Image (cartoon, rainbow, N blue to C red; front, side):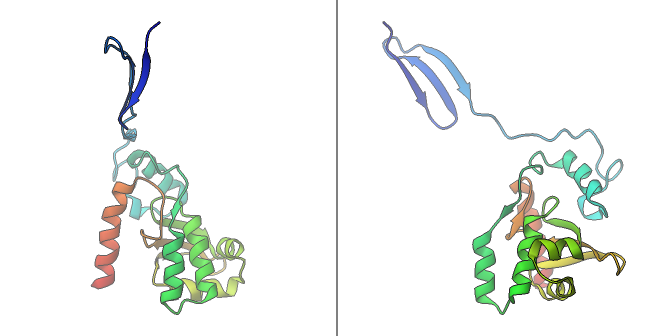
Length: 180
């Protein structure tokens, strides 16, 4: 009877015959996912921060980022600390939480005033003020007043949906704009 042992170093897993030292079976941990890059960014699809509709951003990120379909990573501790350390109101906190949980990709949110109000469980009349007062949200574009469409950018430390390597660049850009 052979003496078989499974050995793993975090990257590779091997099934070895302990008596002979023979590697019977070896698996390697999967490498990082790579996006398909079938379209040219800036020519066939827009750059992420030029997108004006959710479907445009999804099309762009499907070319750039293999992880953007995963759920958003929301840093609730950062959200709580921000509320405690500043004079953020309950309404601002609710809006920030609603936006951070519903980002479309990277740190960009597409939605209407009504969608934010329903997700945050607040009145629609408070949404606009809360967005404009927030230090963690930037208004990229607003739509017509009756619809109340918003394109928002949220602090990448608070919420991110996609490959974390892209977050580092967006984070530097966020804080460079804050300090300038």
